[in-house]
Image (cartoon, rainbow, N blue to C red; front, top):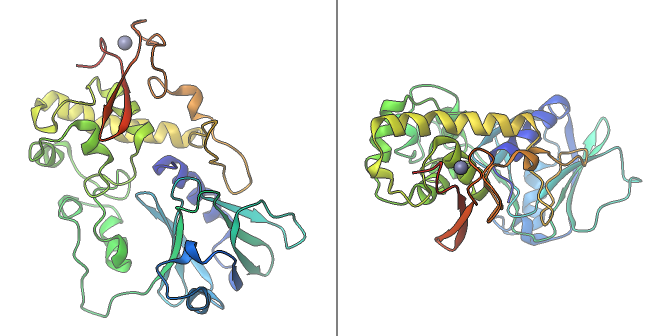
Length: 300
Ligand SMILES: [Zn+2]
């Protein structure tokens, strides 16, 4: 499933050429991907004729700002892709569910074999009305995250975004100390920290030297500082490599290029293989039905 680094790879790429383009038409061939709207027709009416002003990201959501202050929000689900095309003559990948015809030229296509992804248009709240913001995000002391949540109420509940919200380790400690859940579950709960999933949860905990099953409230100050530092470090590293593309999943950038960070995974999906640091075989445990990988020697 695409996580923050994959979605950010799309953001950076699309921010280069989408702002200033007008959505001439939106063809929806699978209504399931616009399921928040009454019909595909309703969705189309909200985007057609609008000009894209900006491309942002919060957690695993990609957010296109439109010229009437509404936002087109995209979630890739398990296997979603956003692909650029020069025009209608370019062959469509199977499972293309939405095609945006852009002006002056080009198309943006939403492709999703498993159809867990979705697109919706968010209309801004009335003046003076504030959506219920995440109490964790409220602890942030800077960044654009709170502003984006105020503009897109559907995302207001999202927990701290490691790049859109700024939070010092001391405030982060207030959160870890308030939770007794396993660290892996804590990190991948989108209402606490937004954007981290199974892969980066494991990689961050390895980097921080912490076992995935450790209760969040059992961390010492030194350990909290290490975890707080590892989150942006691992995620920025993954963004540098264009995210991870696993053999059974299909993440690619808007031009169809896969990421290469999977070549740098230290523990994810490496059960039984030697740790790159200490040669101890990597172990796998199950937490909330998801496999978690760790080194029993490097992580405590
Ligand atoms: Zn090790």
